[in-house]
Amino acid sequence: MTDESRFDAIIAADDKVEPGDWMPEGYRKTLIRQIAQHAHSEVIGMQPEGNWITRAPSLKRKAILIAKVQDEAGHGLYLYSAAETLGVSRHELVDLLHQGKQKYSSIFNYPTLNWADMGTIGWLVDGAAITNQVMLTRTSYGPYARAMHRICREESFHQRQGYELILTLMRGSEEQRQMAQDSMNRFWWPALMMFGPTDGDSPHTQQSMAWKIKRISNDDLRQKFVDATVPQAEFAGITIPDPDLRWNEERGHYDFGEIDWDEFWDVVGGNGPCNRERMDHKNKVWDDGAWVREAAVAYAAKQYARKSA
Ligand code: BYC
Image 1 (tube, rainbow, N blue to C red):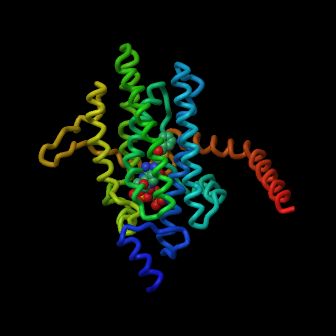
Image 2 (spheres, rainbow, N blue to C red):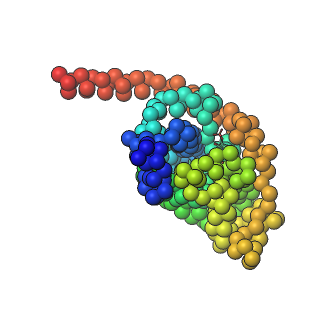
Image 3 (tube, rainbow, N blue to C red):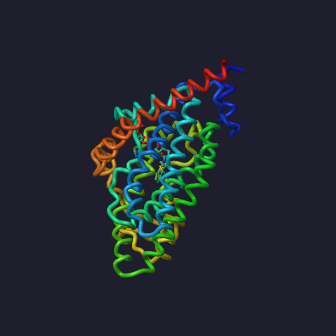
């Protein structure tokens, strides 16, 4: 059996490819690209929520928000570790992000302007992320699939706390309801964009599905998210800003309006409302934190030398 036929047999049998296994170079590169982008998204995704920690309206909300932002850092770590099993270092990946050669999710280039955004991010952004990540628990690369199991459990808490925050606002004063609605109006379309371009415009989907890295296409995941979220919005009494949104009995799904793809590609291309701010902040904290990394490496070297002696 050749290396290639062994790899093909693993994929055909729905088994997992593991770090020591032979894999096509394109498979390895696709995984590094996707896992790195995913890790960078978790880390950059701490910024819009971190923005509200000092302004949370109660101790309970502050504790929840701190825990959530901390979880995102942890997700970044699991994902960088999964990428490292493919023969790249975390340092290289972070450098590529800083040089603008790797991406992070478009959603984090939108500002968080009011407190309800903390609820909307949990409900819609983490909700969209889980829809995608539940699929990724079945991805063909073992370390990525295993990282997803734990991440999905934590994301599920994030989604619920976000929805609960929105329900609380919707049951509050008129001003609170308006705040929640304003947040929904700004985040609905960017949340739909998280799933990526339509299948017809997605250069990677076909190959990634053949390798079972992706199990469900961008459009099918987006539809799943819309179908799950509309009833939640109705229950909360919040309006989704899409006049074309309606149940289609024949399809058994909600129809929804056209996404503004020019806006999507603009944001992906670096011209969203906060792209520059996010990367400036990321670069600054990386430089400011250099002494912490140096101290940790020096400490580890000392421990190692002591043990070896
Ligand atoms: N934003 O052929 P396609 C979280 C790029 S964070 C930016 O469909 P693919 C959270 C794509 O990379 C969770 N770029 O690609 C954290 C490609 O560009 P390149 C984030 C996008 O990879 C904190 C090109 O467009 N989740 O939960 O087959 C707080 C063509 O696209 C986007 C993940 O990262 C986008 N939205 O499919 C709260 C999930 N969409 O590389 C919450 C893992 C597409 O050719 N990633 N592009 O230059 C994936 O599942 C897939 O990579 C995607 C795209 C579905 C996103």
